[in-house]
Figure (cartoon, rainbow, N blue to C red):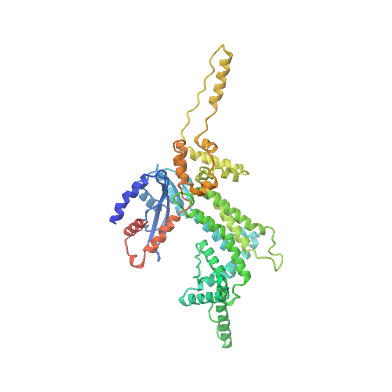
Length: 528
């Protein structure tokens, strides 16, 4: 605790030296058994050198219900303790929980900001929802059937999720949970390797277990399973043959069949089933790249930053549309050999989810502003939305509203009447100079956009740090540069909170679970 108390003033001093507003992400976490609940709070800002800092600053224990009001009170206490006042407070990047909406509304009243503008959504959390839609496809609107057919289609999809290739594979993977089953699976990997040439043999690997709340765990499970396909087939065949013998033995004795998972009384995973799994893996792959792009944050702010949210979401939407396009004119009921429509249904559900959250980006002008103010992406929306004039008009209006809080107010022009003169030339000059006076000078944003060169891809990939770029332009564009620095330092996700909780879980070994919450928070924050 003494070390924590000695470090805390240094953290406050570091925050006070920020050249940007201080953005905040927070999230709740409950210990195993649900006995204790913590709230991780992370500050995001740039230091004087233009280096992005993602700094855990608090880990309060939150007793009782995690209502929006309780969360807001805890966050307000943290902000006050670290000297983060309303003029220094930036944006909040949170998951989609409704209590976060209530919390930000309460903080908006206290700190006097517009809640819809400052409440941003964790992009990786949204990608997780899209990934789950691809795997589970729970959106009824995606069925494309009449109202009367909804119940039939829903029943079909429930059965497919349970007994289709993905359901069978997940059941097989999850059955490997005892030392005996792990060793049996390793043995079948070695046996499968014996059938391969020496150069094609694989290292013996553990199965990757999918977690229902994490789409990327399913992708990793599919990827590992596809790699170990031969071993999984041998493992499943072993259990299927065992149950066949046990069932036959029970029948001979007129006994009840022994309990066994459904997949042990199936044909296992055939080549066609593995093809379906590979197809789903292929559909999920763009989300893998998108998540990596938005969750990892480098010190130069190249990835995991808000300016990549719009381009990445448009990439995801385009990939989903491309995957769904071949199904547009397929009659899934044409004949017995017609393809099943599960992938079409799930892709529709995923696209709908992605599009819903893409449209929610309009709630805050910060997303569009981040793209416009980045030296590499500055013309992205103008080009990508060239055929969507109404989008550009609306987005530019919101941008100007945000920019107005930074740019200096221009003095109103005063026009004088032409002086009385007997000289014709003097009278003409007076009129022309009046016209020149009426031409408003370009503001800093217009000057920057039209006069400063756009970054090349080489510049962006090399050492392109947008925060340092704008720090260097502060003398030339003092107001716009500050606006850009404040926006460029917003993270795209709240992944730092999850990393904090992952480390906290490691810290909470059985012998340490009795530690007081204040000491536990101090230990974790010192480690971070």
